Length: 76
Image (cartoon, rainbow, N blue to C red; front, side, top):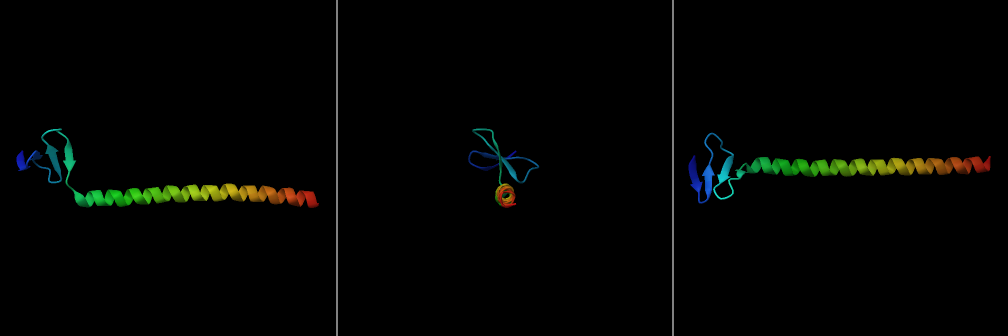
């Protein structure tokens, strides 16, 4: 293992990982990977939001349909 900064150890054979000397935690220094992860997480949140919106619309359409059926039955 090669020292690269105070309190941090480079892990042999791993260019994107380092180890904190104090906590012994493995840390990623792959900034592009982090950026891609954050973009993907935002996209997943948007998809969940869209799914919730679609389900709400479906529920509202069913309620509208039921109300219309009640109105039509009262008229006829």
